Length: 233
Image (cartoon, rainbow, N blue to C red; front, side, top):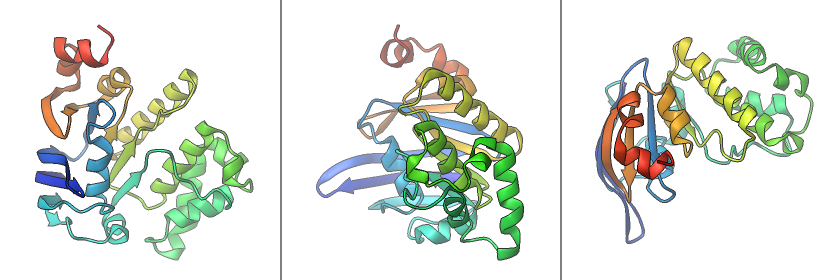
């Protein structure tokens, strides 16, 4: 579904992503793990068109998207839930969700809203509430629901558990699994390496803009190097 081939990304003169290549196949959960500054978020931003790779190719369902505008990438079926949620704080929950459907036919919005409210009952309860007044967990649900309004084939999630209490982290990961079971392919960036690898089909470990390890989720969970660096032993 997604092929990232030898991309190099720079911030000015800083070489942030150094010739990285990886694939995400239809129906997988693929996770990228690594320390802060390893380049995980930069990769997602580059895939979704918010940043441009200086060299390399990005293919989504066989179509080269490395120079495609972000809103057109969403229209192709690739949605990005950014780090920090980035909800529209002064708009209501429902207005945020409706913004997520900007690539969809007007007649499909009500069905999409119904689906999101079924998956996130808390959002239905809060649908008239201003998004900036929601809790962190509710804002994360809203950011995910807004992305789902575009009916993505591939959903990219950047640090969905950041800043959440453990019980909410488990709830978010349960939702990720549920989305996957209903046919959504997922590319997950996550600091909680143990949780991410426990649900991942495959994973990649990044260090300073390079992929240094890859394997199935279980293989990486059992890797001595991953245990030492990311799993506390």
